[in-house]
Length: 181
Image (cartoon, rainbow, N blue to C red; front, top):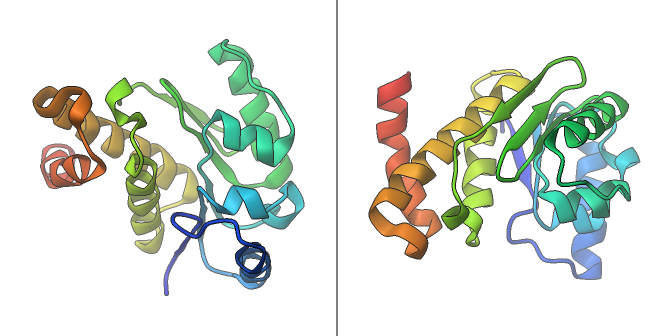
């Protein structure tokens, strides 16, 4: 196992929450934290782990207790502070994704409102986890993952509009990789 994605599809039953905490505590592989994992973990649970945390604004509030504003510049500062505190790369998902490891910050403007359907965040986690498994740094895995997922989502949106599903995004990934890599 070269990287771990934890959270998507796990749910929040008591046994699951306990298993997530135990696993993350013992895990020494690059880690992507997403979805249900935010119901189980605290800032201290993920501090100093090698990997990427991929919350949307509600998950970020659950994890940190911090309410984000509608001002991207203010949110950049909050994400940078959280990334420094945890020593993890944070990929805050939104209309403009904010990616920071506490030293470097990038914004990703690919993606569209049609991607608010279930599963597109899981696709992003899978891309970031795959890049981590290839030995790419957590910051680069997060920023590349956000771009690839968002660009694939934009291509899918051109065809499907608001009826797009996560599988439509997945189908566009090979073309995005071929074009940009």
